[in-house]
Amino acid sequence: MLPISRPCFIATSASLRLALASCICVLSTGVAVAQPVPVVPGHFEQFKALEGEWLGATKETTGLRVVYHVTSGASAVIETIAPGSQHEMITVITKDRESVSLTHYCAIGNQPHMMAPDSDGGKVVAFKFQSAGNLKSENDMHMREVTYTFVDKDNLKTIWTTYNGGKPAGNQVFVLKRKKVATHTAH
Image (cartoon, rainbow, N blue to C red; front, side, top):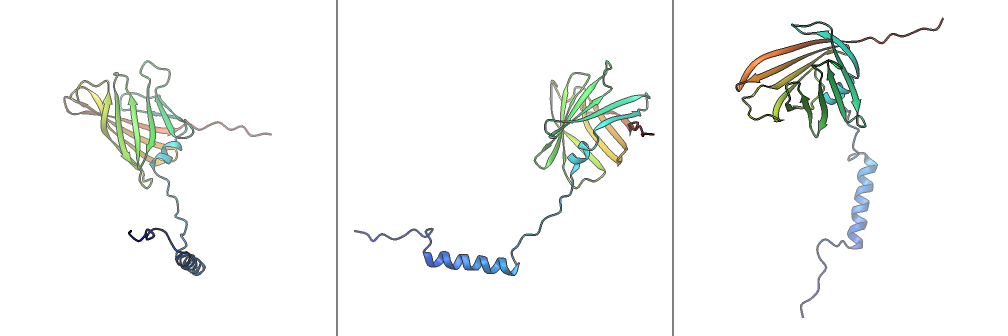
């Protein structure tokens, strides 16, 4: 008969006492105590801060209206471009692990999906094409890139890059300013 030995992962009471004493010693000296890490807001937080109505222009038109709405338990931001018009489009922006995800529901009928890193919250967020719904070929016309520049809390610039025939076919630049909400003061 072979001798029965304890597996190496079962600790003896002496080894448990030694481990506990070591933990108490380390904790009492403060050597291994974790310090809180400051939370740096990423780009997704910047998109959430856009909540509200924005007014602006493109090269071709004035009177552009864009509405940002935080929804789904603050896990998504809906951007509505030209709400209520025949050219209304929406873009849904969400956090996706270490990235920010964007799906643009375009008036031409396709849905490009783009990603950008959710980094330190710098002023520029550059989304790059990943895939698209209802797009037969990447040679068909579609939005391929979009860059959001957070100028300040009340000013935003977006550059949408259209591709056609597999190459850049032009940019649509939106310069937007947050619509101020009228406040009434009591007299």
